[in-house]
Amino acid sequence: MSTLITVAPTGAEHAKADVPQLPTTLAELVDTARSCEAAGAAMIHLHIRDADHRPTLDPGLLKASVEAIRAETDLIVQLSTGGSVHDPLETRLTVLDAEPDSCSLTCGTTNFGDDVFLNPWGFMSDLYVQAQEREIVPEFELFDLGHVASLARLIDAHGLPYGGKVHVDFVTGVPGGMPGTPAAVLAGVAILPPAVTSWSATGIGRAHLPVLATALAAGGHLRVGMEDNIVYARGRQVASNAELVERAARLATELQRPPMSTADAREFLGIKR
Ligand code: KMH
Ligand code: ZN
Image (cartoon, rainbow, N blue to C red):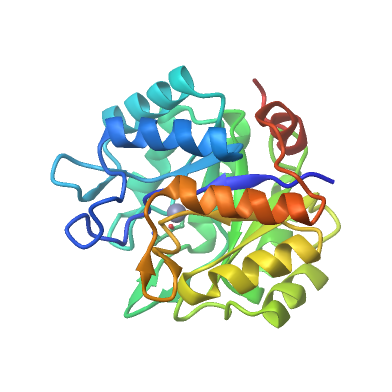
């Protein structure tokens, strides 16, 4: 079995001033997308920034980013509907107007450090149905075990997502969510509803490597990138997103689970083009 590698290059949390190598401009994002595709990524989970490097959900910038990455790579483009903890729910729904291949859909509210990442039932439900109608494939972000139950409720209420596949991503190690440990990941996998066809996992910060190793060993897929982790090794910052993808691809290949191609990933996730 091959390994789907998703890169989450930017996120909404790190400041460019603290991490200058964080890709925040469109040119940097396109360059990052190219190098991460060459290193073995098949999907990009995208947050964008404005001219001051601050997180934005500006519709024009989102559309331009999707189009630029499509023009320069074959990566599956997944837009974040999580945005930042400060984005209103209505604005987060408008992300779908940029017509990405995929969108994130977090399956519940979670404490997020000192903040709250809000995902009430009505929002999740609207996002699920709108993604179905627009033929956009959601990836379900699970920050906690209770989110697995909400995913099952979404599927029961609305049927399968567009494309017929159900891919989930365990986001572990957020202060307030499930810990980034093998035990937590495996507990989540053990209670996934039968409709789930694949899972990946990511560990925030120091959970990065243990969670990566757990996912590879347990038949899961990988998400890596500077959204989740800016430390490559003790005392050494990540130089680029491609560096994280390269290491993930290397470890996956050693474990006889080489990176999945973009074409295979489209089929695997039920993406339409
Ligand atoms: N930035 C976090 C508040 C997602 O992209 O869907 C939410 C997040 C999840 O990153
Ligand atoms: Zn994100």
